[in-house]
Length: 299
Length: 299
Image 1 (cartoon, rainbow over the protein chains, first blue to last red):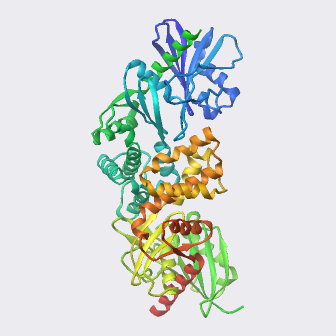
Image 2: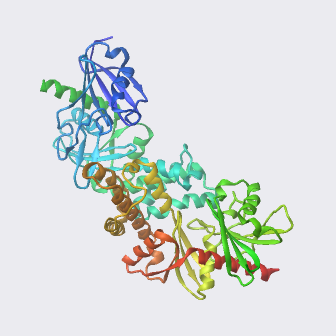
Image 3: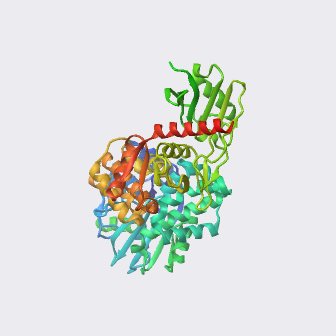
């Protein structure tokens, strides 16, 4: 195995992922654990990292980490930088460790004053995308529990907006009366596209659409899979309608993975807005590599 | 104490309320329990009723009940009648009891085919309102976890629509990231009115507003009470925007109780749509009395 030069860490609310990076900047291997920020007290971060990294952290080790690890409830707060700014505008924030052989640097998030918004982790993916695609201008969509839309120009994040569509979908399908009518899995492509189109053409009617999923279950045997696809289409359509100033007439990239990212690309496509799909992990790693390079430059 | 002629029962998802009614149709007293439909199997309804009614049900007893007790998961299913129809269009559905001295009759709900919708319990309140206000035409709003808007004309429910605004508010404030930023109690009147007005003028932007409550908490020390009022205003504004065909230019009544009903009346007032506020229990009792009268007429 090649020599490990440093460890790249993506540390979110629910997961911790560690990559061993070689001296040429290539990832050698990945390890992960469920020790997300939400499960840890400030004292718990170092042991959780050492536990996940295992023998990778036995000698002198440099770690660059992004994500919720830098939140107020994280290992150490890496304060937000206000946009407009480059995606990695600030010096990395060092985290306190109990050992001189372990050095941990945390990437700062971005904020926006008006309308108020924050991101933490996505700035690293945007930096990675720009490292892989220099001089790219346009809008980057980062689907997730809290999807971000970021306008990028001349190497800076100009503005961004968060839509909590994934969080809303989960709350509606698990914690309202719709839980009786919406499946956890399954799909109905035609129902999704119809609901998406309907929501995009009449986004003001979102509030009126939700209960019909329950009523059609009771009256017309709407299947839970179709209800799931319709709820997804209605919420994504509402997001796309409200995010229109971001994507209309712009060069577009979706950074994500799996079905969710594909659904965003597909939905944008129905609106005549083609987007390139960029792999989540590739963007994260390229961003952490850029952060590591900035660290070396600063030393 | 005057003689008890019959028992009026409002049996919802979470609560059971029983009134003793005298021979002139006046309520003598009320008893209640937490034995709502959601807590009971079909065999559990009779004991729950007898337990709540106590000595009121010791002799030969006639009961008229409305609400979720007549749902598919209730004591016995009282099938929905499709609108347009009178609010109490169908013969009451008898429930099986273990004793000849106890006779239970259940009020049917209403349904609508397109757009699909259902109500169960509110039809009794509408019937009660019309019994108290004969020849009234207009739109009745019944705020609750699932608020109903019903267009009433010539003694019939012409159409209706459900908005799950209360359910949505609870899910968002308890089961999404907003739970960290939205208080369980407290209010900010100015913030509510601003959010209401904003939502009514740009209802298509609902999806874009939600995360800002979290971001302003992190960046600008938004108080949880103000966040609560803003979330309430945003969701109610979205409902009123989508319900506009119901309330615009109509004679309006809100049947409800407490702060929630007042908020609907206030919000409609800001749109130049004055509504009379009608007490929930008065409407329910008048409706159950009308149902009891129909039973006597049918015998």
